[in-house]
Amino acid sequence: MDYNLFRTFVLISLACIISSFSSNAQVDTKFVNEFLNIGVGARAHGMHGSVTATTEDVTAAYWNPAGLSHMDTELSVSAMHASWFGGIANYDYIGVGKVFNDRNDSYGSATIIRMGIDNIPNTLNLIGPDGSVNYENVLEFSSADYAFLLSYAQRVGGRRSGLTMGGSAKIIYRQIGSFGSSRGFGFDFGAMYKMDNFQFGIMARDITTTVNSWSFSLTPEEQVIFERTNNAIPISSTEVALPKIIVGGAYKSDDRQTFTYLVEGDVRFSTDGTKAGLFSGNNIGIDPSIGAELGYNKQVYFRVGFGNIQRTLNETSSTDRSLEFQPNIGLGLALGNFNIDYALTNIGSVSGVLVSHIFSLTLNIRD
Image 1 (cartoon, one colour):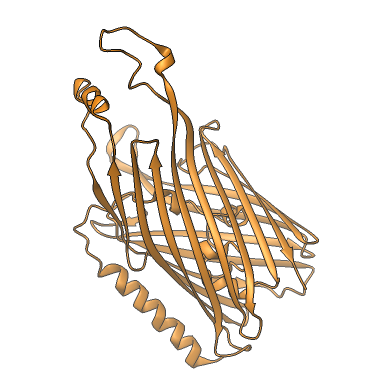
Image 2 (cartoon, rainbow, N blue to C red):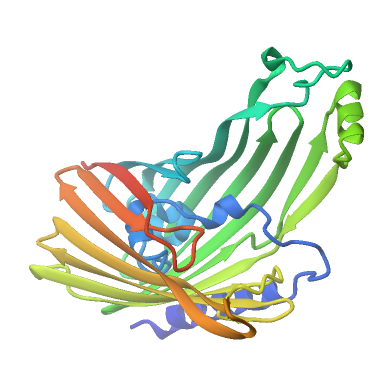
């Protein structure tokens, strides 16, 4: 073990955590860019996102860009689709990763994420000025959130080094029909360290904060309808996503065995003031999760994860709270150059029925 590199990893982790707590907590920052908290790839979802220390494919651009340096392919393409709430909301992802320099394991990737609700009826002009109803005036629009990530990672300290670092620059675009849109820009940073069978990772999301600027363009006629129906007319505003730090540690068996396994625990530190986590305060939230993966002959994988641990109010008492959590499970198949992954999860619901089906497909092209 190289103690200098390990010390470097620890210092980077401490610096990221300190920077997240020193952010301005007086800004209203709750639930900003929530679609970016969902995650990509069915493998990670099967482990409830506990992959900060072990993600080593093209989806690492989202979970921890430092993991891109551990990819063993010349080119990798991954895609995911998830449909929720009876098909009302759709989440789509595609990522492309390519080796830049195999001497220092440097990789780059491009990622596109979209979450949207389509075919929303626009009933602003349903009722005319004379009170008549005309259904032909009902048009449809979409409300969609987009994220574009450019990521880069490389090994630090030579081929035998266990330390890798990476970062992502991301552009956010959010649109609500022709009524309003928002643009934002931010950075993520990640680091990983491997030490025998142990792996450690840290991911600093929105490390410099991500600022979204909203603008709205309602016609004078639409503004009149808003006023007539006692609805507030939206005005230009700014949202700020404060840093979130995810720290992970894992133990991974030897890959040369017929049966392989890994167990990882992650802890997410947030400073946006939400209080749904297991440990939370006015300006801090601490959310733990754990995931495990069992593999057979590097071809078949079974995964399980637990997270979204919350103290919820008792239905019969407003003072008593009960502890609830969300379980996820997943399966994976490695078929030559293709990886097919599936996860069963109930994103957005605590103690609910597992009804969210997530599929992802990865194509790996080797030399």
